[in-house]
Image (cartoon, rainbow, N blue to C red; front, side, top):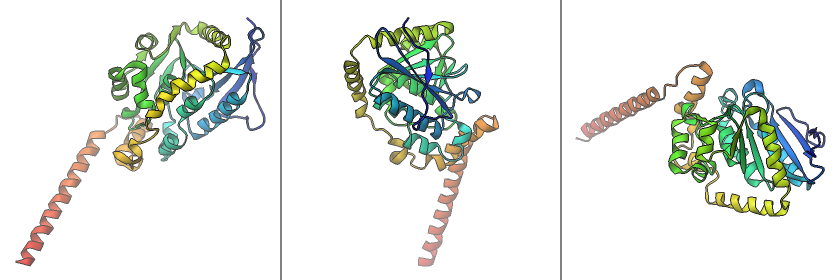
Length: 300
């Protein structure tokens, strides 16, 4: 219905290894859509700094292309994605990923409406990227959820409390703290996604939503998006980890344990770490009390 074929965008800093970047236009409505596709299906489209750097360049181009009215975030293969690359994160780069290159910031700062197109697993960083998008279209086989506390990979900043605006405070805490999995229909019922369609009808549905958006004033849509996103400005971008509770989390034993357990395919031993730390504190206290008694005897 008036759509051109998807055409890859290349050259001028737009050559990519971890994503695909394409555009298509509508001959009747005018305007077009840019599609950023995470392209590591063999690794569940997990993200690293390199992935988000490539996404930044694609988003920058799409936002400065006056012919583009919508940006679609998709993923190759059976699954939308499973968050950050744990094997990569174990080398101590998680903090850099969260503090320097939060992918949600790309969506928040985008001038154009952003639509997530989800199939299969949509977990962890991919889940909060999807719910930070302006729209989320899900296939009926989609599964949503967070995984951070299961693998000692915390997240803080605006996208955590922002979920309360999407699904409500109780459900948001349930999702983040219990790490449960939710079906596409459950996600629709709680307001996590806009609509659910059969997998084979997913892109037809996306085309329909894009057509509806292209029928509207692009300038008005940009203003509305910025107005909605302005609500996030009241949240700290990154704060809890960087200075309040756990400024050295990623160097601490508990911070390392989750990723190690995941890679070694075993259950994490979080509480044994806590027990060892308690025993160490007790030994230190005993040593301190012993030193105090010794000093007191010397004084006598």
